[in-house]
Image (cartoon, rainbow, N blue to C red; front, side, top):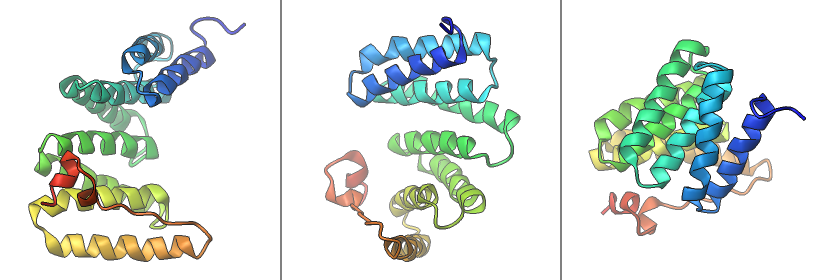
Length: 193
């Protein structure tokens, strides 16, 4: 038996919380994710990569619970600590920044969101390459921010670039599916109206 504070136990707690979150059992997920985070802070330290991931995951849960202020605090903490403890433009840091950027976008804080999502896009291209799925997603997120700001030159480029990269994926036997946010009745979709 590993023990209650062993890293594998903490990961198991966090995984159980993540499964409950995926099932939209947000209230049930919170104690597991919180316990994993609290113990990880104490046992592994504030800047440990697992702790940073648990901080980010708590932010995702809080966002799902409709608690954006608390979610933002967690995302900012994860980004700040990752920037200080991980190599520049580390993939985890880019994920944390993307989550913060999309939260800000959802709140209509488009200028702040744009800065973060541009950095995520640039970092993804540099670290992961232009054909990586996460890079394409960061370009798509950036495009969503640019639409309401009416920067159509950038939007046209992003649409072209995403399309050209999607064609490369398709030649490898992958099926590319794209849904315009405007075709979905959501807050993000209504940005295109």
